[in-house]
Image (cartoon, rainbow, N blue to C red; front, side):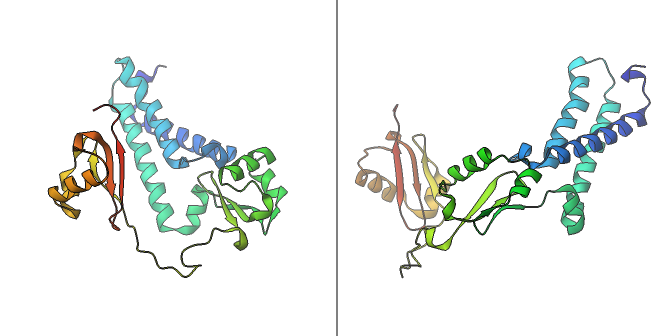
Length: 231
């Protein structure tokens, strides 16, 4: 029996079964394979593409059934996300919890096996956090998104302005004032006049707005300017 011969409700049933199957598969392979991607979003994207994609590309099947299946997947995705926000216990079912893999400087080998992380992968992640010296590490945590967070021992943390008794001004969020040689007026008007902008450009060694690729200004009135290579 072809898909065009299936009754309407069968698309919904198949969509639910496929959703559950891929959900279980993602849980089995673990969060390391899902780095930077939320598992529910991954499942949603894969199934929606599968349910609707073939129908759209073939142009032969009725859209009603596949679209009903896609709607059911979208509803399940929303329902699981909502339930995860509403009930913390259920959240543990659909989301992986953080795993401590280094505790007080000691690598927990049983946690590496549980999370399918090799020593080489762990060392690579630590180097990316500028912590190649294991003696500097207090804790390392495998986060739900697959990334590893590192907490250094206190003596190895960089000294902050507060540590040395300074109280610098908050820099805040930098606004883009010039982008690709053009002024962004809604941002400029919040922090300066056109005359102040032109004077600042000259002070930074430029003659015209068109010479600048990017100009940002933060709340401490600090400018970042980079030139256009092609005017």
